[in-house]
Length: 434
Length: 84
Image (cartoon, chains in turn purple, blue):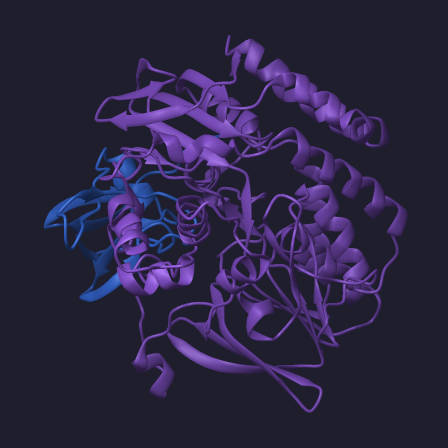
């Protein structure tokens, strides 16, 4: 039996392909509905016209293939919190409805996706400041507009559909700020030539933005936020929501737990190392989608097919060229630390400030993100450093005029468990029914 | 897109809030213009949703007496009792 973890573009493609090749598949996903983050959609009671999606037909086709295939069993609302491999067989520990169960699989395909990368700035913990992914999720999954006057900022192609979707649903986009210069698009000309469908997609969003009279302001970013306004390159912009995102961070917890070799991508992002079949360094453990490198839904679907034994190596190469091009076009500006002050919170969970981290370096001798964490608790909270880990490492390194070592970056992606579990669930399956 | 009726209710800090079946606690509270979900342990600062997809744990609330539950991923059930 093949266990596929994650039901986004990569996981759905992997599950459908494997089942169509005659394999028994268990598709495990933490959400109630298929689609992952990219194809989040409203519940069936909404009569959703899918107008917030670009090309939802691809999602629907995969949903149909997965839902009608008798070889696929689905576990939704299920969280894999722990995993191990013994004698060539994988055991996954899955919590569903407050009950823990063990799943045995011969092959595991990780399609665990990614989440928004965040960078701290003064005021980023205020209610109303969120990631573009949060604004998008509230709208696409729940039909809720997070605000009336919204600033969308950061870098990367993702901020465009977020702004367009919010505007389509009635929000006023008071500012759309892309930190990088459009001249950098020339760095991915070859990517566009190899992937002409991406030109069509870019034009689709540009047209939507033009319809709402939204223009992208380049080279600008949010300096700070206060109640009711954001400061953008020194200028006050009144708003009730600020959505800022700096690309994505792959979710590598399960890959790390199972001992798969990780590696550091060109832009400092930690990813799972895979071979041409999408197999990790652990035999039988495959990875597809964002966990092998941020590349978007097209690349994720191709990788899912290959991980399940299907074809598509040329298509994958083409999409990888585009993904690498995007990395060059949309780097995170290196000067982000200059906007912080001593009171700025860096670790949201444990309320650790920049001042706390700096004094752990100056006074206590912290040498890297790990020792700064031990001195300050930055990264020890409920999110386990998923939001602040990389930022803390980079702050400590900058303070010591050093570069963050790859070993530290990869160590920061390692977690002893992939999700929290209560002692009751661990012991005898606490019935946590809401 | 048509929104179904907000046919279920729950309480948030003893105030009655209505929700559409399938909505998360955070989505229902944002619809009701309630963005502050909790105060922090040390600084007493207001916090709300941040990542919106269950990663950052900033939106945690107490649900039916069980603490540290993520408002952004737990769906509302009729008569649920939610506290900051």
